[in-house]
Image (cartoon, rainbow, N blue to C red):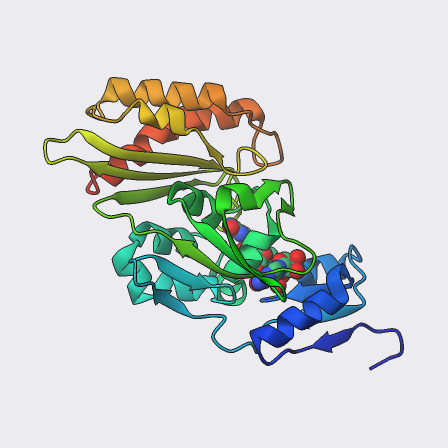
Length: 290
Ligand SMILES: Cc1cc2nc3c(=O)[nH]c(=O)nc-3n(C[C@H](O)[C@H](O)[C@H](O)COP(=O)(O)OP(=O)(O)OC[C@H]3O[C@@H](n4cnc5c(N)ncnc54)[C@H](O)[C@@H]3O)c2cc1C
């Protein structure tokens, strides 16, 4: 290794990884799949003293079912593994579908659950669906572990609540008993691009067709997934008819403060929310609807 080149550290256990993380703090760059890390390095945007690679930590990529029915996605599980995993497909198809919508096969085969979240790019897919599902992030440091709602973990553009001595260990998705979901990704450039807008909905209906649960998250329109639980609460006990969905879409479009970028202006994104939200809810509640 040439002098001055950052060292590569390959901890063999999670405990070792956490010890190194505490020792080196932000001096070491954590690397999981390396998709984002490589881009930053190639552009000279980061100059770490060392790389802390998670790829050889056993079990950190496990996808499992918790005793309470929650799905647990290990931090280094590949995006493609989540998309294909029978447990995820059976228990939470909307999550599998969302991971399957990320970029292309190459990115999905390399990128990881934890890396996608820690990157905290606003134009991402999984955080939107995870926000609608009420997912929690499991974080660990050498000093202990904690759980935080995804909605609190993502704090702004490329900013998270991750401490300098912490690692993402897993994402926990509570059971959505009796509910169905849909993720609608709208791309304005190539089909493999990041979303211009993404809408995730989770719906549960009573046997008489009245709404028992509605969660909506708007992705890629603001710095972090936008959720308006007070607006969704208006649907409880109601039938999700055209008038109600139109009102909900209007209220969400009025409540969100969209950003403008190459993929679309703020006004365009507001229009997308208005048009796509009813479509996403219908697709969840009436799965035969294309
Ligand atoms: C061409 C292209 C298209 C893309 N399109 C999409 C898209 O359509 N939708 C979408 O959602 N995403 C998209 N992405 C983003 C992609 O999903 C992420 O870059 C990738 O998933 C990051 O995962 P990784 O494991 O490679 O992270 P890495 O590059 O290894 O790390 C990313 C960041 O997370 C930190 N990190 C990684 N793991 C942990 C951990 N366990 N604990 C703490 N910190 C950690 C790293 O230090 C780094 O800062 C695209 C990326 C590219 C290059």
